[in-house]
Image (cartoon, rainbow, N blue to C red):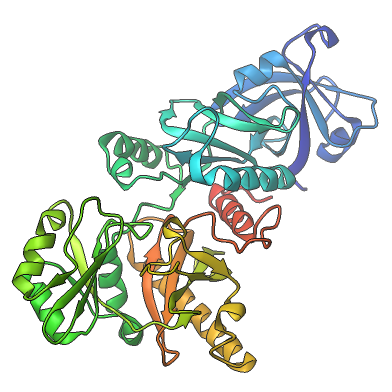
Length: 457
């Protein structure tokens, strides 16, 4: 017999019943669940349990449960109507509500969630459609048997704060690497581990660790730029003698910030950089003088030094690369959910949107370089490389990963290169005019969340 059912929960005015322990279910649900009037059950949400008595309504409503406000409050459920699943077991005596999906973040200000706000509304909308409760919470707001979090009220068209059930799964969208490595965040993840609540993505991965993992796979080496951990002037000198273009990137960097570009010429070294405050000279006669100029900034964090690739350009030498968003569909299967081309602004050597980059469909970005047949082949190759890289990171890195942003580029000969892998990819990566109400990436995230909950819907 089926034991999991889609239901709608509605708050019940206290005047409609003499007892706050009564729940009223539709006759339709009574027939589906083989439940009788007056039957006693235990209702569960997260870690909270309430004993109830079922009354069967004669109304024509489809699969509804009306709960007294006291029951909703005891179970830490919203006072608004909402869709959910009920899992019935133990001879119809235990009814468990769920699943509950928590999105953890570190940025909540006036009911706004920063750069992922719109994406969270998409998750909520898809969750509502799928009868999965999605809420947002700060990592410091998890308690023993409830979470202080935010659900979206369709009635009021806004996010509402309140106590909510402990989640079955958590999606980690903490923005800051420093915050994620803080003691309070570590304590939070420790609590999840102790409670056996699965969470993903495990953490930010630094650029050097990603390179070490990928370079351990011989079949990917042709697609990886030569990369070393910067350990002083000697490393810089070795790489300058080997390559005619170099990039120095912070191992924990993001959004194209704090990157140096070094271009050796016959009698001098040219330097460019992104987002640093203060002026730095642009030309140096020796490696020693260049290193001395950038050393104060290198001391603030670790850097990698990476071979620069002569990239394919888009109109007037604007650099071009690609972001392929990959999602895990099962224990062993990954797929590409979306792929876009990113074009740098003029006079910039990074394509990040935060640095003035633009987004295009891949075929539009490549149409001046290749014919249609070749563009299809290149797009397929990019997808194959992205999926392979995602599988390797997933297998080699500690923890669970369900979403990865793979940055690739083409050199002037059309050869693909793996530039970077992001464990917290931006949610503003759709070309203008191509953003559906709920993007495939939002659906993929919630589908994977559901798979981790253990609920079989």
